[in-house]
Image (cartoon, rainbow, N blue to C red; front, side):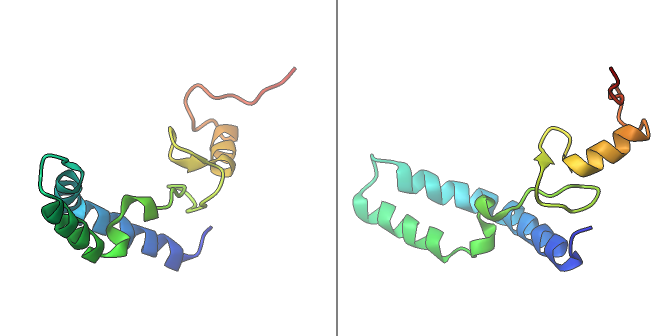
Length: 101
C-alpha cells in the first residue's frame, strides 16, 4: 500500500486539473493562434504561467486504484501488475485464468 499522503496529493492534483482545464485550454488556444497579434499571444502565455503548477495534467501520476502503487500500472485496467495478479489468482478478473502447461 502506498503512503496515504502521496495518494491524497495525487487526488488534489486531479481535482485542480479538472478545475482549471477549461481556462488552460482557452489560454493555450489563444497562445497557439498565429492569426492573433504577438502581444496578445504573449499575454496569454503569461496568464498560463500564472496558473497553479498542479493544474497541469502532466503532474498527475497514474496510480493503482486498489493499492495506490505508482509503478507497474496498466492503464486499461487502472491497477498495478501486483494487484492484477492477486485478483486474477482469486478469479476476480473476468477472462483471466492462472496459466498452466
